[in-house]
Amino acid sequence: MTLPETLYTASQIRDLDRLATEQYGIPGATLMERAGAAAFQLLRARWPRFRRVVVICGPGNNGGDGYVVARLAKSAGMTTRVLSVGDSGKMQGDAASARNSCQSAGIAIKDFTADLLRGNDVIVDAMLGTGLERGVEGEWRAAIEAVNQAGVPVLAVDLPSGLHADSGRVMGVAVTAQSTMTFMGLKAGLFTGAGREHGGEIFFNDLGVPPDIYGNVPPAAKRLTEKSLLGLLRARPRDMHKGDAGRVLVIGGDRGMSGAARLAGEAAYRAGAGLVLVATHPDHAAQIGAARPELLVYGIATAKELRPLLARADVVAIGPGLGQERWGHWLMGAALESSLPMVVDADALNILAADPQAHKDWIITPHPGEAARLLGMTTGDIQNDRFAAARELVASFGGVCVLKGSGTLVASLYDGMVTVCDRGNPGMASGGMGDVLTGTIAGLRAQGLSTLDAARLGVWVHAAAGDDAAQAGEVGTLASDLFPFLRARLNRLVRHAER
Image 1 (cartoon, rainbow, N blue to C red):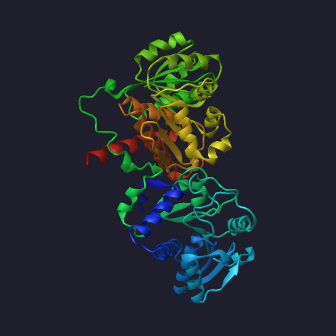
Image 2 (cartoon, one colour; image 1 turned 135 degrees about the vertical axis):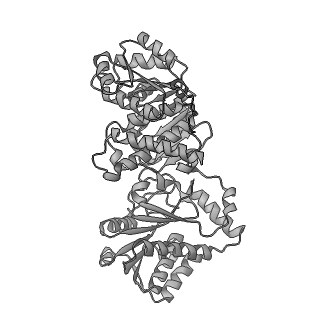
Image 3 (tube, rainbow, N blue to C red; image 1 turned 120 degrees about the vertical axis):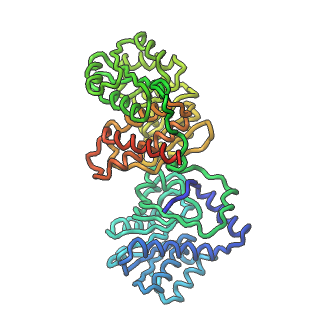
């Protein structure tokens, strides 16, 4: 199933729901019936042999969707149990009608207790929807914890209970679902941070609303997709030479960290750069050149020695293995004096955090810890609202920000749109992956892509290559394993663009 590119906040989803009812005349009860039917259809498709289902419903519209699921499951001959959490006496409108219809179908509704989860094949989570804004406590927390400990698959209706719809942070505790069926619009929080773990595989149903409804509500963010990136790379002319593909200068690799600079340099080549120079510590320059002879490696001891290399480069990638000793500070200072486009990563970001400045033509690529140092926050603050953090980084430092992590974000001042990469896997949590990303983005920037396009394409193709490399298993994936897949993915984009 192909998901839409657009992502929305909870408030925007409410706007879409209101427009569907008021402007397009679709009753709320009809939307609820369609939502429940979509969730039930996914349940049957995802677990076709399961016969015993328990649906846990809260008192809001999310619970109303759950009651529709239960009624349809009972009608299909499944053994169906419904458990209620919260004050059902507060139910009103369409949700109350859905509960009454469930009871009329002969389904007994019981108050939630953990022991009633036993003996079921699958749990349907319809407790809390998109309106959650405070920490989960009391009976809600107990119910969510019991669901996570039940040891059976979970289908979340619209959003896993306890997950914040906009940011993807866990509000104290959240259901960990194997699948989520979400409605009307994709919730931004499902695609970054903890949302990727708790949402499981994401499915979408627009509930049959007219397509032009979405023109009334601009999205909060967008997903990076292969389709959205087509055309950024074109087939090369037959008379092309290496100068046409750009020159990247990688600056990094202090003592004991030569591998980082080498990985970034090779990634720049694999991304298509014509020439890659590496400015590294003199102690190991020869070793890097011997390991990858295509790299032009220079042992640089001072900022003065770096300046001739800067004069030859089109793009600078600084940070991999740079360190924070005097050597790293010298080279960072020289790079900042140039007017070259830059990709700034790793220890270059830590140096920047100590002496903040903005640049209109660079791409900073922090992980959450580095982002926290740049903004004077904690890593937890960054992860609690990654979208806000990415926007703040751009506002403070300029250019483009790539906030790495599960659901990497790309934010810029150029168009104001945050894009989200929902590719990548836990196998990529190993040393050197960030260095490969830095080199990839720099190699693309050197070929003439804009700062923003290079960041977006680099992030997506790096994550997609990581998924390709992990087909043999996530455990043990090395950063250098991505190189053949990185090259293959980029050439596939070129071929598709020609069609």
